[in-house]
Image: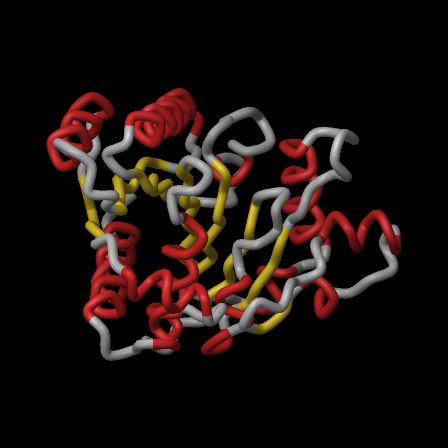
Length: 253
């Protein structure tokens, strides 16, 4: 089983990218599970035509332990298994601790053994890499961490912090850095800034995505690009990125 965590600053296009990558992997016949680790619980909406998935934390709050895997895991486009960790009620509790509780509940219910996915992708908010939000990169959940960034200063700052967290964990047998994914915003000196980031964190750019209206058009339809415009150049870019991610994950750890 390939286990991936994708981090990035909020609003960088992480969930859109991951959903399209998950769809591209599913096209290849892989069984993919996408787990949203963000209190907004909107990681998988494009895979389900805008229909929400009941979050693990909502199930725990409402039903204690009286629910099944079928309540937690919903099927999306091309059979991608969709899970949303969720978060606490606004102003109540810690979102990071919520991520820990949700992932532990998935493990406790035997989600990975029951569904036996080929690929698990954790979609993780990367603005704050506290103990809870770093959970997917430790504890055996993910083997590789990928960071989505643009050339915007705040996105690069968040990416550097995430890479620092991975570096701090490297001697504990936790997830290793897989690489940087450049989601272009077409800002000045974007390529140079991201290359400088890679040099600073001793990593590499493993994929580049164009800024395209094709993506926003598909989002308006609450679909992935692979479903809405499967023959578009953007769909081809997502397929290439999926291949690049899989190639990195298949390298010797």
